[in-house]
Structures are given as structure tokens and as C-alpha cells.
Amino acid sequence: MDADLNKNETLQSAPAAGGAANTRDGILLSVQDLRVWFELRRFGFGHAGYVKAVDGVNFDLHYGEAIAVVGESGCGKSSLMKTILGLHTPTKGRVIFEGQDLSAMHSRELRQYRSNVGYVQQDPYGALPPFMSVQRILEEPLVINGVKDKDERMRRVRKVMEEVKMFPVEDFLAKFPHMLSGGQQQRVVIARAMIMEPKLIVADEPVSMLDASVRVEILKLMRGLQETHHLAVIYITHDLSTVRYFSERIFVMYAAQAVEKAKVNQLLEDPRHPYTHALLAGTSEPDANNAKSFKEVPPGEPPNLISPPSGCRFHPRCSHVIQGLCETQEPPDFEVEPGHLVSCWLYK
Image 1 (cartoon, one colour):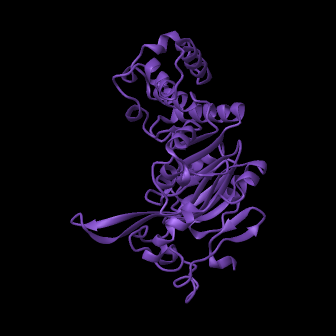
Image 2: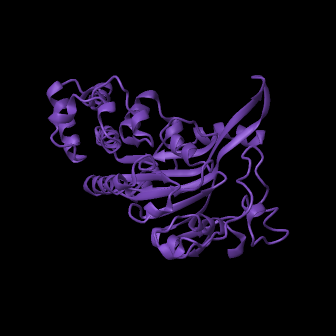
Image 3: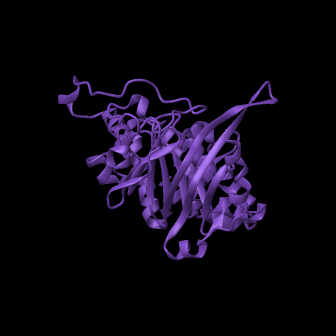
């Protein structure tokens, strides 16, 4: 374990190989063997192990593409998101944005990177400062990033408010967050994420705190903004019922690892990993004929990320265990069909 940590400096100091090629090929963001481990200390001093929040995740995100990262609570979705936002430092591996390694960026480059990445929080009321008006909330990123012209700031504030459909603009500029509905608050959060005209939006369960009647409106709004501005979007969620309408590809995470990656229709219509089957079994259905039916879900609880199981991390809960293999060897990605990758020994 310590040997892996010692490799961190070498990995982070290495140049971003093929960075220029990535841009030409249309890759905006590349996550390469990403590991984010949080050290535990006993009484604040002695080393007591690591929480392996993200442990070997790989994927590429293209310009204008929307992907969904799904999984149950504690699987590592939020830690992955915060590392992409630059809030956590990788323990190992790299996050490369337009050919530049985040870990090698200086403060000025990191500020420029963050202006290119918008963040939509899960709880809109908690994400908005209660003592600031809507106008001040939306102007603040512009002020921080050096837009000194008040008229230019006001023009951009009005433009983004119109894009998130807060009409008439004058009725909302002077309001405070507590004076808005949940859907209106989330529109302000989306407007703030869009104000710097980013290339990437990271949305952390953006509709889970909203009423069911408002969720579709917000998802349609975000999809429209993505298509209009050719935005790349990383949509973090545990609700598979919404990803069909928002994403092109789905990455399923379990115990800090990505266990299945596929296009939306491929995964929803033909899931391969046993854990993906379990996730789909837990998705609610509006069909009244299924109201009294009970679907089989795997027994047990998600593993402790301080000492995860050896081999395949899902094997203690899996009904398809291959004895002597799943318990001892971690499965690689097997391509079961073009673009459909599964980390499961069933597809060796």
C-alpha cells in the first residue's frame, strides 16, 4: 500500500502524454487510473489505514457529451466528482483536462480550469448564500474572475437568467433564496454554473431534492443548455430512471470502482454486471401491475472501503461467483460488445 503511495510523485510529475492528440480527437476530460485515498489516523497521530474512496477509475469524456455516473450511496461518486472539480488531490493516477494534468497546474491555471467547469449542487437552498440577492449571487463569479465592467456583468446576468427561463428577469434580481421555490432556486444554481460559459458541467444529483413535478423541467432545461452550448456534462445520480433522458453513456460504480460502462440503451436493455442487474431491480416502476411484485436484490451490505474484499468487490453478495477466481483476482474490463465494458469474470 505504501509502495503505491510512493509512486504518486512519479505519476503526478510525468507530462500528460498525448495531451495535444486528446484535444484533436475530441476528448475534453480524461481520467486515468484515478485513486483517491483518505488517510485515517489514530488519535490524530498514528497511521490507521486508508479509506479507498476512488480506486482505479478510467474514462474519457468528449466535447459536448453527457455521461451519467450511477451507484448507491458510498460507492465513490461524490469523491470522483470532487476530484474532477479540483477539490481533492489524486493519490494516484491523473485527471487531464484539454491535455493538462490538474495535479501539475499552478494557481492561475487552476483558476482558469475552474472557470471552465460549472458545478450544480444537489441541495439548491444549501448551495445559495442566504444573505445575497440573485443578482449578487450571479455576479460574484464574474467579479472573482476579473470582469470589472458593471454593464458587462449585468448583460451576462440577464442573458443567463433568460437561458434558465427566469422571466421576467427584473422580478428575480432583487430576491433572496428564501423567497424562491425549490425549482427556482435550482435554476439560479444552474445559472451560476453557466455564468462563466464553461465547457464542462458537473451535476451532483441535481433533481433529487426537488418535487417530482419539477424534476422533468429541470432535466429538460439542462439538456437544452447542453445542446445549445455544446457542453460536456457529468451527471452524478443513483436514480437510473432519469439517465435515459439525459445521458449518452452510463458508468456504474460499486465500492469505488467502475464495474460497467456502456451506452445508455445498451446498459438499460442488456445489463451484464450482476450489480447493474441489482440496481435496475431497485428502480421504481410506474406500472401498477408490478406494484405487488418483489424483485430479488443481492443480500448483504456494500463493503467497507477501508478494507474492501479481495478479488471482485461484489463477490460476497453475488449469486454467480466463480469459486477460486472471483474471491482472489480482480477482474479487468471485458468488452462484451463494441463500447460495452464489464468488470466481471463471467465474461472472460
